[in-house]
Image (cartoon, rainbow, N blue to C red; front, side):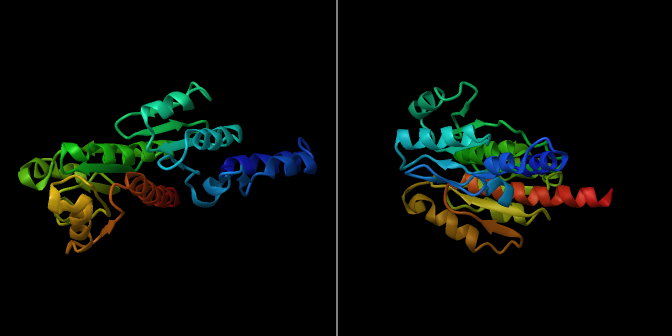
Length: 257
């Protein structure tokens, strides 16, 4: 349930279109709904601005489908992460409108779209191999209503590629930097722009990369100010944080009018 839904229910009660009993029935699932293997948080979008999302790894196909069906039946927007081709084929039997984002490995179905933000999120990758995690962040931001631009394959091995695009960084309200290997790109970006940066370490790299631990430690130990770090390969989490920062900027723009 979104803020607009709650507003409409209260207005309908006030105007007499709905009875108090009818409003109570609609609000029955405002908190969460127990569906045996999961407790679906229908209140999350209203409470945090981010709807309930399904992390599909570790769940059976039946569990994912049950949660997805419940979210859609209650009028929510569907965001599912780490979705395989086979799982998408099953999910699409629930609703043919579902969209699969194969690079991001995400499924979305936006029943109630948010207005697109004026503020821009820039998502940058060090290499082409980091793009799947960047696309997870991008798809998340888009689903939540944030406008996104991307700048891919501009890592430190050829830093001129980033510097040639440097002016674009200042068009963004917030920047996500996605990098594996040694993870140095976030520090470079932090040294040339005043925008808040969300650093996303990826598990891309050779042996001593330690499945992303090297990139994570580099980003945590960055001497560039204004960098926050999410967990390894957590494009979804980075997208959510970037969107929340972007929304704060939208609210401040409205206050200036």
